[in-house]
Image (tube, rainbow, N blue to C red; front, side, top):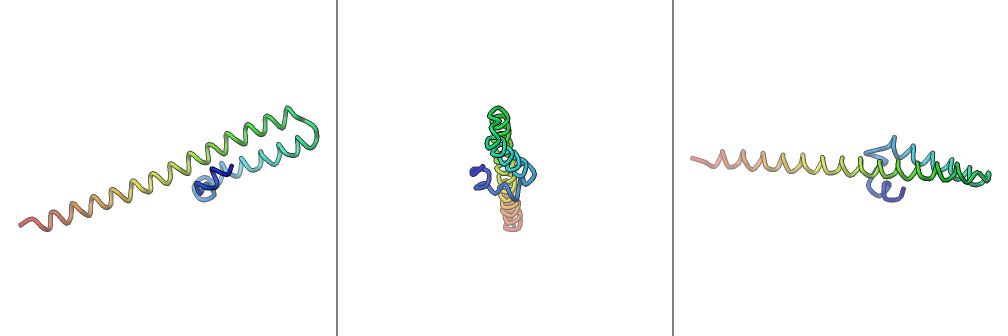
Length: 85
């Protein structure tokens, strides 16, 4: 969960992160109720959703960086064309 939060998943993958948080809360409740099997299942689901949130957040960041680099290349090409006699 922390890794996803550190990767700005709140911004880039809020649904997946929210699902992970809900599952973690439910896992804690199941553990308190003594239902170890349900707690384990929910914990694993929370971890999987947090991993998905992390991956989607990293993808969004990488896509934004790629778009920035493409814009820089386009600007350099434009400048080169203007500089040609």
